[in-house]
Length: 498
Image 1 (cartoon, rainbow, N blue to C red):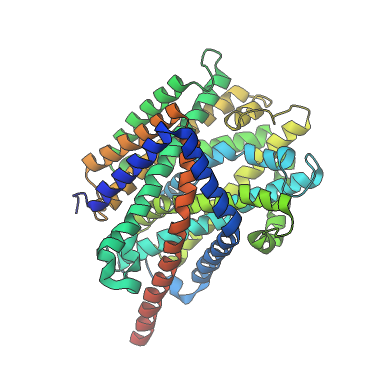
Image 2: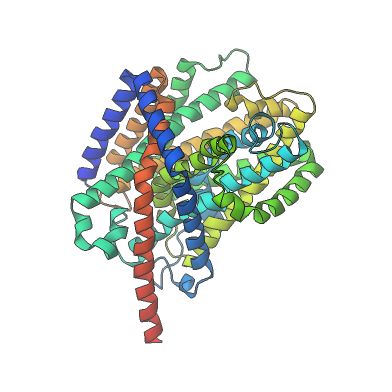
């Protein structure tokens, strides 16, 4: 089970070709991938809106369905991790570093730079900024992850199948998933995971560099040498963690992440505009639920300007979450053995959504309050926005230091989780992939990030990842159909026995 499969070699070749193209011809690569992404978001935006909404409905159905009492595992299986540790692990893998990166920057952008429909800087833009940020990071995002994780956990732990994406399609296609078609499905998943984490390593290094440069005068901003040093240090740390196994390294890191995140969140709420934060959270929560259906299907077919905003934000996010769903879904499935479907969906769908809402209410409201006070944040790089906001608060240096630590630990956890997932996917679904395989993937991810930072092709590779989300979306639809077919048959059999 621990030996690498053909998926490993095929994926390595495809990733090498993509990275080589991005490194040797970054401008042409950017043009080609940019044109492809533009075509997909413009021509298939309606498709992304529909399928993600279907995924939300799918998850909510099983949350309340009698089938939700069935366990992701044998009836006697117990969860491997406490509820708090489980939430910390799935949250760290799923959203962690993105919340820190965009916590202040996205609401600020929707308010002052590029509102969805309102006038920049207006009260309506303020309300709208929080509502759409909640929308992009809320139930829809976690439903995408939940679809993959739920299907994998059910087939792996309940039915005894290998922990591979291809295994979840066997109720529909039978043993054909053991041949070339199954390899194709798994290669797409591995490509998305490896490239997605490599781009995150690159952008994470850029943000840590931005934070350190903002904090300390002697450190240059946007320095390739500094970013490579950061990636090297992080690589050593996440490989040490990966070597120790999922029950030690990732578990301890995830709990550390949550402690740091909660500490930073409380400090921002206390030191920022506290009353405004709570008022905006409450108002935005109501506005989110009130406008949820409209936002879910909003395509602005006859308003080119609004349509462009939807393509650049909502459709981009939906494609981005889909591209990340193999990695996050496989990891969440791995740590969810022994929980019922209902408990799983409650933990994956609702709790992280609620935490994200509080986070954006605190950081977004604080950023907009700083902007409204006369400090212009709109000209800063995205990675500098958070630190510029902290600079206007009491104990700003302390907040920035905690933020850099949090970004670093989220960074390490994501890379650590990814090496584990890639090891699983290229070792026939092994629950304990060989350290040599994890080491290989860890070095590969870091090498990709460094090469593309050097060549300036990191953004183009991110665009390529968005393109890869399109074929994987069809696999996700098949996964939902396969899961429903298998679970419905089992539930009927259980009812007959009663």
